[in-house]
Structure formats: C-alpha cells, structure tokens
Length: 435
Image 1 (cartoon, one colour):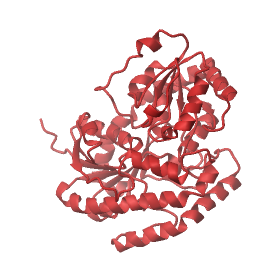
Image 2 (tube, rainbow, N blue to C red):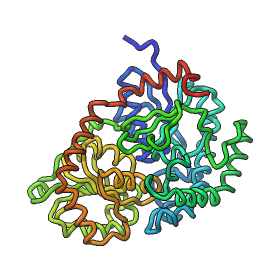
Image 3 (cartoon, rainbow, N blue to C red):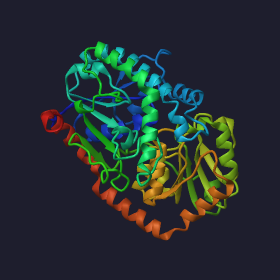
Image 4 (tube, helix red, strand yellow):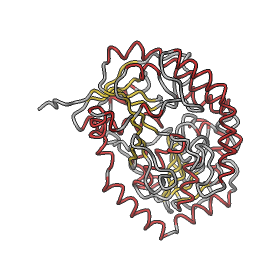
C-alpha cells in the first residue's frame, strides 16, 4: 500500500565522502519509511547512490566549480596549506582561502539549483553545505541543514572552544577568544562580499561572521552524547542531535585477506579518510613506523594509493568498506573525521586520532579529553609515541569495557530511526522548530 503522506526529500550535499555518506544514512532511513530521496549528484556519485536505491538529479560537472570532485578539493587543500604539518592555529590564518573556495562553490551550485528546483518540486530540502544557498532559501519550503563537520563548526558559541581550533573544552577561554578573533579577522572581507551577494539574490542579510542564517533551518547533526558539548552550551529547539548518521553497506562485503589473517598480532584499521592521504610523504612516514609494530593493519590508502607501498604486516586498497571493517578490528588509527569517529564508537573501538585539518582537530581533542582515545600529531609524532600509543590502547581493559557499554547504548538507542518522523513533523509544523 502506498504511503499517502510520503515526502519527496531533496538532498544537496557537498560531493565528497564526508558529506555524502551521512546524507546516504538519512536517505536510506527515509526510503525504508516509505519516502522518496533524491540527490543532486554528478557522474562520479550517481552509480554509488544508485546502489543504495537513491534517485539522482544531474549536476553539470565544470571546472568553474572549485568543489567539483574529491581530487579538486584535495589539490586545493594541499595548495592552500590546509593539509600539511602546520598547527591548527597556523591554519586558522589561512581561513580566507577556505572562505573564498566554499563561497565560489556555493555561487556556482546556486546557479544550477535555480534552474533545477522548480522542476524537482520537493516537499523538503536537506542541505549539507558550509555556506548558504539563496536558491534554496528563496524557494520558501522547509529546509533541514545536516551538519557533518562537527558541532563546534555548526554553532560558534563563546561558551565553547571555536571550531577547527583543536582547543580543549577544559582549557583557557582566553585561547578560545584569540583563535576565534583571528579567524573572524581573516575571513571578514570574504564574509562581506558573500553577504552582499546573498542580499543581492533577494535574501535577508547574514548574521555577522556567519555564512548562513541559522534561524531559517532545522539543524540536525550526528555526534554521540558522550562527546557533545551540550553540557557547556545547550542548543535551541531547532537543533537536534543523533548519535550518528551511519549508513548501511549491505551491498558490500569484506573478509580479512588470508595473507593478513594468517599473521600474528591484533588487527588495526588505519584510515585518514579521502583527503588527508594525498600527502603521500606523510603516509610513507607513518607506514614505515607501523611496519615496526607486531600487529596487523588494514589500510585505507586514498586516491594516491599507487604512489606508496605497504609493509608486510599490512593490507590495503584505495578505499575499503569501513562499516564492514570496523567490527573486525581491535583499534582504529584515524584522522578524526566525524564519520569515522562516530562509527568507531558505534562499534566500541578505541581510537588514535591524528587530525589533518578542520574539525578533525576538535574531534581528536574531544576523544582525548573524554578518555576514548589518544590524540597525536600526524606530522610530528615520533616512532616511539605512535607505537607506544597502540600498545597502551590495546592493553587498556577498562577502556574496552567502557567502550563496549557506549556501543551497546548507541546501538540500542538507534536514534537515526527517528529521523523520518522528525522531518515529517518539521514539514507539517515548521513553527514548532523555527521562529
């Protein structure tokens, strides 16, 4: 029997794994509950989305869009210094480049959406972007903002550390202020230019320092309560937390390769996501260190996987089905991306977080502060530090028990199952969430 109240939900994510994958998790839940999920996508993502039963609307690939694909984003990150050995504070001085990159992306995408939206006619739009899209706001229908970049980036609240700083929530607020002011100063002119463009498109002016109007949206984010900052800065009614936006990968399977399975030692998953591994020199350095460990490693090697070689105690590929790998391993070495962090906690795995850029610094510090793992410097950690951290976490039985309890809670709660009803309620009664 057809669902007479089925919604047509349009997803407009940044076309990178860190943004598309959470949207897939939400979309597959909506589809399971009888709704339609449609993504704006390009040729790279269309077949991947089809595997999940997701419909797509074509976006035109163009060199005009700086966020056209993962390779383009990775090259920008390298060229701008966002990926590299500089500290989070040093990278804060580069934020003008990031602001220009993402506002140009929004302007190009907005032009396409303005032509597509009238024909798509969705009931609700889910965006996973970093800045506002006027064509979405001007359509006048309910809009949900899915945040896959961490809660400190989602809300800049002076009661908490600034996003992308990696500063501790128990640290010196004076350092928070200094970092926050630094980033505001370097982004000020880019914000003014973008605000002028948004107003010129017919939208309300943006709040100062902010590249979107928070009050216009229902905001949803995936972050376990054990890591969240709600204890120091509660959120408004239009912000709803989920433990994660984890997708299912029933169409993917994984078994430990026989040559690795036959070797001794614990099993460790090493993944720096889709962007950080483009720094091949650093990947080679870390692989050389891990080669001296008595344990075994499954490595997600990234887009430049042909440019470096793994050691005998490792197996890897350009990418691996992470959700099939995580239940098999004893430890995760990660860049601290929000998807890997939330998924590792779902399976109760301890983490060594070695952030490369952005909110990864915040996630790594939060894991460290909350005792779910250790934060190390991806570029400066010594051989002794990394190998010792592996042994420390693998031998910590109290941590293993604590993580097992967190995992049970998250899996039983299954908060993503509530997302369809939440979006449906928002569509039917926006005033309950947005003034």
